[in-house]
Length: 510
Image 1 (cartoon, rainbow, N blue to C red):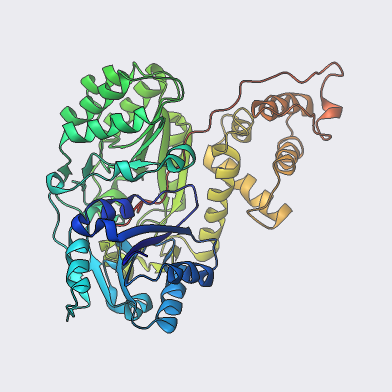
Image 2: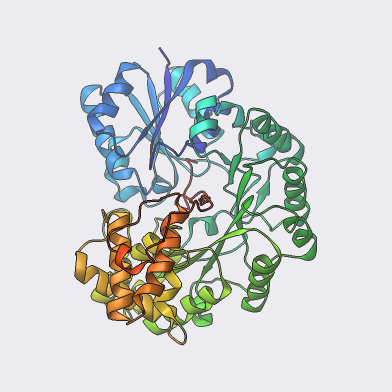
């Protein structure tokens, strides 16, 4: 039986906890006395508590995030009721700030704030030696990446075959965007390149094809980003897929030359735009050069096979419905394959709270702390925009309606205004934003395009039929049959390749 159990509740089974593996790799002499126990938020808290108690540990370390704090609070409450002597240590972004307000902190024995790679081992060693620590809240110093043991060999074969594998070449962010916890992680620190690339080689040798980098600014250090891109370019093979989070206005020629050599589908860039409104960007201390950003998008779309995932945020202080729509239309015109419309969250510790009074920012009291309304967007409008974001995911981002989606905003219509109209209509028809079967969604889209917009049924049916086949489907839906030529036969379409989705910004325990 282990003395020490490292655990967390992942958002889904497919997400392998990077943070737990970082902690385990750096336990030193305690490592043989420890084990991992991963769960997900869909499991019952009492069942999780039962499995943890069955291991009979002396210490349980739990990673706490915005997506799991509610469920983990139940787990901790149960553990302490059943075994009051069990030492529970918390860590992670959700408990690194505003600790005095949190029930889960009250229940736990100790909380380590910040990057706990080394501090966790130090605390556990003292506790296992029988020392009683007076302080509940323990602040971890920023570790030097050169001192850290890398965690990549702790991904097992099942992880490599069935789960998202996270890697990091750097930590920190040089920017100060007030909505983001990464803005508090200054300075940017690089992991030594040679051992990092050696670890990537071992993962490749074990058959891993999907690499998700969690670096906030992968292209900040040109020498490092070029070395990593060159490393993977020299090891290209079918199915290789690498995800990076990029600074949108920094793509110098040496990077462009390498990026252009990757085949379509091998690279995905997550590009945070957040807002095109200059005044909003000033309010939230965000710096970006829109002209360079635009030029970089044009290059990526015209000369590379990169899959671009671009982000906008709804609810930022100073952003009106009109300026949000203008920004959305500008982004659509740049042609990213995915646009993530996110709702602003008031993450613990972020300085976005300084705008609460002036802009009348009102957030939910419980995770994920999304904005409910502000001075410029009332609650009813924010609800419309939540539905817009959800339906955009179901229709535009899903890959199921590649050709059909642009029919919603045939020129000269505004994509934002047109899709908002579709979103309002769709909600009025179905009254929900989830559990809509694909065939039903396709039928509703057909109805909207033909009846509401007056587009020719035969033309719309032809486009929808091509989209329907793109996922490898060959049954003609009943609602399309009257509008397709009688000789229509299913044709095998190229199978759609779905790029890996990003998890929340707070990807792994600290």
